[in-house]
Length: 438
Image (cartoon, rainbow, N blue to C red; front, side, top):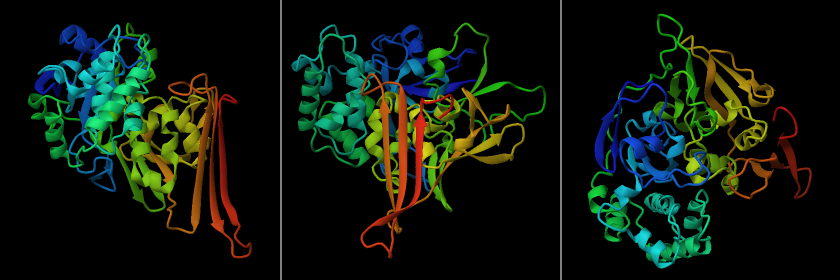
């Protein structure tokens, strides 16, 4: 674990020593920082009341250039549920709360909610403001549908959603000329009253993080007594279930490893690093090109605040029989690269469909952790056409765990011997929730 963390809080530098037991950012904000505008609701990442904006370095693709989503952006701004974010994970990042947005008075987003009567008790309102503001900061096409999707992780018990949707429509109309270039966008958003000028001045650079684990791993192979370190990718499931009274554990936050957050082509594979999140995966142009239409299923998986934190490797290692990303990756014929942390360079590759042995039991050894995911690389400009589909049955259409799920991947190729009829060259179907393993 890090001995110290350094980050910006609403534009102001903070440096502190994280506790031995991981402390959630929600608790630190409310009890140590005195910023109580961030509300505690479900404490499971479902309601969005505790949402904050997290500024961090963007995903790296193809050896160094950021992904096309905000390709020119030096910082990406994500909605995050602070009840599933440890203080230690703030190192080298910028945390923005509702107080930071309102530093110079009500923002345009707040005024839109007020004027459309989109607040009653007001408990959910800070999270709603955060979710909408984060989506606006991200740039890209901004319309009513995009802002409504941004609210998928925000629950409101008393007002109803029509007024929230009216607010989204209003904001989309007012901000239809949102610039694509990062600096121009920030200037525009200051002029439009979305963010205060005092905050915008601090949104061009991130603080240097304290020393992070090397690419060889977090000192598991250091001389001396064996260290029992828990590798944690995202923690969106672990933080909900762990016992806060248990003895302190050393945790290696995989999602903080910037060198492991990449999606790149290499030979016949797409290599996906251990720190890649669900949001990274669905937004990535290389993934979208290889599996056309896969982004249409993103809204079936959790919410924006969860997808910005949950890693693909964490979803796999959790070994749930109904994990949505596992079902998709099984159909896509994924392989896993396992790193033996007791030996610096020892890696082995295993097919994902061989990784699960029984309920919550995997083929990973005691000193092994997921280092990479490999996907076969197929492109649209090849003679092979890729067709993909995903479905799940759940009580709710959004933000729910599947009762069962399934994915299908078909590779089609034109056949010269069969007029106008493509031939199936490969077909994979996955099923989750029908047995102890997917």
